[in-house]
Image (cartoon, rainbow, N blue to C red):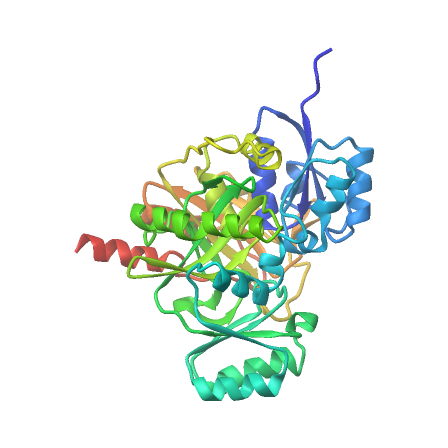
Length: 434
């Protein structure tokens, strides 16, 4: 009797995890995908089990009992809690960074100090544990200035303050009102870098780095990059700001030095390394690092990835990544996030979504579910970011058009989405043509 195909467990329940499940399920190496806890869309591709992503003991027991061959971690919290260390101690294969390595995302202060120590380009910064000292520093420096909560804040812990008043208000929300809980025990105050932001993700086995296609996300809630920061309202790939020359510099001056720095610190880094970068006149600077796939960047990136993802995941675990390459679809991909009214603040759940069947049958479009649930035979809203409509096109303009055509077919009471996803790429392409 031949060996059965792989049984893969994906941890998480958002749009990024739907994209991972969708991609992993295509692998000829895989027999079954299980997701904990999953969502309404993931349930069509994988067996969903009600285990919380932070229940590390429950997840490891499940992986042992179900003879899971490979676990892939979506969100940052289980990584920073040490899920990889626990699984590895029990002889389970898991893709992701160790607890000590995940501190690159779990503590912005740790990240900034590491960058400074190893000469990796980033903005000037100072770390404060005392609110009054931080406030007097802000007053001495003036605005614009960046205020960051040190710990994990679900993409909502960074304020780029245009005025001194705005910076002080952000400081008080973080350190006095404790809006972000323990994440606000310390703050990092940074100089404000100018330029264009981009996301750069790479696979790494602790020594080699295999870059993914470039991408760019839209963090702000409203058009023209206004309003509060969110987990991300849309993304596209490739990002025109990352030219071949900039790409090379990011790999040579940022990604490889960071992997070497982590090894030198006794925190070997395996998994996905996500650099949030600012590009100014072709020079890349680090804004932050994340220890996992971006959400929503994973959606357009994985839609463009033609190679089987499973050999890449296993090579990162086994230390055999050297020489591997990824084949990409030459077309562009654009993801528009459809959100609940009120997000990133309070919003209602349980609204019935209509138009999904028609949207999901569109050519070269994948509708990834983020905050959805199945209620009898209906799909209902169950989160702030609800869906990610991801479309391929011959270039960014065509992909944008297609993503919005399909987004317009989907509706529920209070649906909201930005109307300008891809605007920076479109502006850059117009500039390059003129």
